[in-house]
Length: 265
Image (cartoon, rainbow, N blue to C red):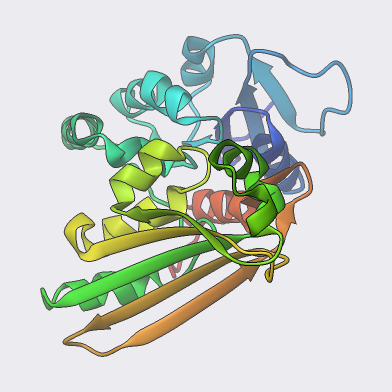
């Protein structure tokens, strides 16, 4: 049984990211994990990990925080209820906030319940710089997502550009962060995370299938009154999902555990 000072983390989803989160959390002897998933595994379950049959059971377990590592649909269905129950949530599916209605609903719930939706950095960094620079009111951010063509095989085939992408970069999208998150809800969460820090109207998102990159690469160009910056992150892909960076699960867990730290970063 968990002691009063035991860390209790809920987890929605047990796909590639969810399994990674559960394994990372279970490695902490002071942490207990409860996972909500439709298909609990028959074996290979890490020690200190339990499974919930439904959302009510997960909430009744009274976790300190819940990590959402499922999908934009799961976010819309479950995260509001978690927040209504006064439980902080760390979401992977930040792209769900591309909907103004969902964003407004989440904001109202958090104000009412006192719970927080804690946005993780995910596959990128520099969000503190971007948020600080945005306070000047004079900032422009261009975020470019570059991934190997294999990560976009289906999309390239549908566009008739699979052969072209073998030899040269192919731009799949250029536009706003909400548009990108709506088109690619499983892959463009980073763009929306950046836009939340900079401002939607100040952020341009580009999606490129690039045969010259071997890792999921994120480029952020910032210009403004406070100065200019160029950030680049080359992340190893998740072994179970080439469209997702392995760092994503690490970021979710680090964000959830940071709330216990006596000194914040």
